Length: 317
Ligand SMILES: NC(=O)c1ccc[n+]([C@@H]2O[C@H](COP(=O)([O-])OP(=O)(O)OC[C@H]3O[C@@H](n4cnc5c(N)ncnc54)[C@H](OP(=O)(O)O)[C@@H]3O)[C@@H](O)[C@H]2O)c1
Image (cartoon, rainbow, N blue to C red; front, side, top):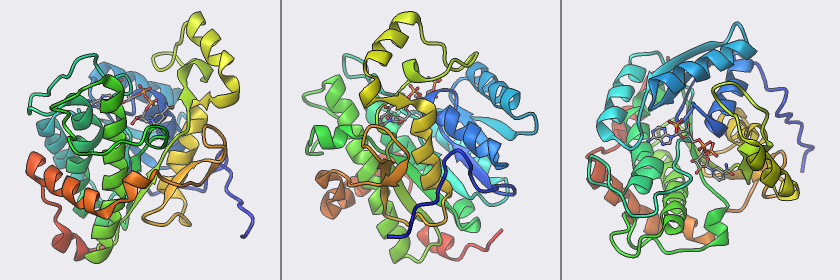
């Protein structure tokens, strides 16, 4: 195998390229936006809270005075918000990448539903991203772009069968999280199969950030301010963790490296930490029958059918 020359701290020049990031107000989404902006990309930072979004944009601009960033309100748990944001983003010229990162990582103790009547963790982490990617398919096709879905090692640690994605029965917070990540990963692979079959010039990739803790991440006003106890417990786990900044390396490479191919799964080299490498996804996430059932469910639940035919004819912009 050829030597891997990718340096996550020296990205190629991304001037003239446009990326949309969900959950850009904190953690991996913020640091991915920062890294993209630092390489000269135009970044559409999205989030559900206008104050946190303004703080995130200000933080990027403090790092890079010339950063080309805009903000857009987008709550992935709310299908109306997803459609409204997509309508605004579509008005721009072609999109080169979509980082589907927003997520509930600490699910509620008891099962909760969104305004649209969906289990909140599945809705936020998987369903909203399925709808967003579908709504932005033409813009992405015009940019010959790529979508990156954010998976998790938890899918390998706790194999589960995705029989009841909305957890009508047997809800637990951990089950809700792992199932939402199995769904996200399976949707990412299924998207690539469907886009290829329809000759749409978009690739779909899945990436996971290992185990990335805010307690191991530098403090940034308005973005990351862990208390002493959090720092202390995070440092105790130093051998098996990394910072969110390092976790973002894998997501960003999956999004921008021309050598990354659709249908691939990427993660940190040591599983929990390290520079980005191709990784092995959990077996359950690779099952095409499960993914096809899930896809049909998402079409029905969101009322969004991806416009493959139009996207396959989209003109480059
Ligand atoms: N950290 C890890 O070790 C790890 C491991 C595996 C996978 N992941 C995945 O990586 C992604 C980011 O995780 P993280 O560690 O960066 O978490 P985080 O620090 O808690 O950040 C989560 C981000 O998602 C946003 N978000 C939550 N609900 C949202 C909604 N309904 N609409 C829009 N944005 C919403 C949050 O926005 P607010 O600021 O408004 O709360 C925040 O910007 C998640 O998908 C997670 O499952 C993380």
